[in-house]
Every structure is written in C-alpha cells, then in structure tokens.
Image (tube, rainbow, N blue to C red):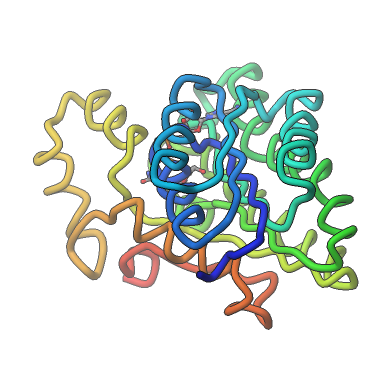
Length: 254
Ligand SMILES: NC(=O)c1ccc[n+]([C@@H]2O[C@H](COP(=O)([O-])OP(=O)(O)OC[C@H]3O[C@@H](n4cnc5c(N)ncnc54)[C@H](O)[C@@H]3O)[C@@H](O)[C@H]2O)c1
C-alpha cells in the first residue's frame, strides 16, 4: 500500500475526479477527509470507502470561505491526528469571455479556484510542517495553459493555480513539503455531463467532438487522473516538486 498511515484531505470529493482520488487513496491505505459543498455527495463516497474497509470522514464546506476551509483541517486533526497530503480539487466552472463576465462571476470563480485552494492549503500547512514532510497536489487543467473560446474566467483561474503551485513549492521546499499540479484534459465527470447538456448535445456527440482533440483520440476517465495524483502524493515522487503533470491524452502538445 502506497499511502499507509497517511492522512489526506481531498476537496470536491463528492463527485467526479475528487471522488476517484478519495477512493484511490483509501485503496492505498490513506485515511481520507472528503470535503465538498455537496454534503450528501461527500457523505455517500465516505460511506462507500468505509463499507470497503477504508477510513473516511465527510465534511460540508465551501472552500472559498476561510472558516469552512479551516474546519477541513481541524476535522482531519481531530479524526485522524494530523495531515500528510492535501489535494485541492474542488472548482467552480463559471465560463465566460471578458466581454460578458460580471465582477460577481469573476469573484466566484477566482474565489473558489484560486483563493479557496490557497485557504485550504493555508490551514493545512502548519500540520504538514509538524509531520516534517508532506505533499500538496493542486488540480489545475490544460485550460490553465491553452486558450478556449469564452472560457476566460475559468482558464485565468487555472493559470493562477499553476503559478501559485510553483510559488508554494518554493516556499515549502525547506519543510520537505512538495507541491505539484495536475492538468487533466477532457475527463468524464458530472462537470462534463453538465457541459454537454448545456451545449444541447448527447454524451456521444460531445465525445465525438472532444476525442480527436486528444492525441489518444478519446476522453479520459476520472481514475486515470486519480492515478497521477496518487503518484504525486506518494513517496514515489520524492524528487518531484513545482511540476505540472499533464494527464490530457496529449491535448496540449497536439
Ligand atoms: N472534468 C474535466 O474534464 C476536467 C478537466 C480539467 C480539469 N478539471 C478539474 O478537475 C477538478 C474536478 O473537476 P470535476 O470534473 O470532477 O468536477 P465535478 O463538478 O464533477 O466535481 C467537482 C466537485 O467539487 C465540488 N465543489 C464545487 N465548488 C466547491 C466549493 N466552493 N467548495 C467545496 N466543494 C466544491 C462540487 O460540489 C463537486 O462535487 C476541478 O478542479 C476541475 O477544474 C476537470
């Protein structure tokens, strides 16, 4: 087991990629704190992990609120005695071009994706320092690198996550805390389901448009992202920090 005796926080763990990460970590022996706006979603994933013999606890939290972000770390310490790993996965999917986005929409997407990632990390870092080592994995996106039509709000937030990751890695290296980001391509989740519904498409129609944009000519699965996050969270990546791991089927390089 690659995460034996480790305690991990996963935000946005009530669905999609966060759910897959929480389950994958539990399979590898980690005790997992699942945080999500959607309390029922997080609780049902935690229940599934527990039924399979793992250790998990759920908490309802909006990561853009500092008190709620702090409560995630407090729960990890109360329930499991410390924190070794933080996965900042929760995200807001407000997508507008600059001409259309309102200040409130900008505040929401940056408030969750950038400030929320910072706040969850801020309150976990003192506990990682106490352990003498740790790993933070920020889920960014290929959207943080490329331009996409009418996605300026979301893509800007993911670009900021990539830069924040490098800055955090520099500040925390002294404490043997590694900080890396993962950039998924198109992955089947509840978020992409909302996207094809918004476009008035079926899953098949949406997939037929998206698949050829990836060198591997398909859309990815959440577990494929979870496996990459597991690598960055585990000691197998002990000399990797400030990296951007593409899990995009070759989308950006194409
Ligand atoms: N699905 C993709 O194609 C794709 C591609 C690139 C990057 N990503 C990134 O992967 C991550 C997960 O995306 P997903 O597709 O699984 O999304 P999803 O919408 O399926 O799941 C996201 C979860 O985060 C939760 N959440 C949203 N805002 C929150 C908040 N303020 N506080 C706490 N929880 C909150 C939601 O309730 C939901 O359960 C995100 O960071 C996203 O930007 C996804």
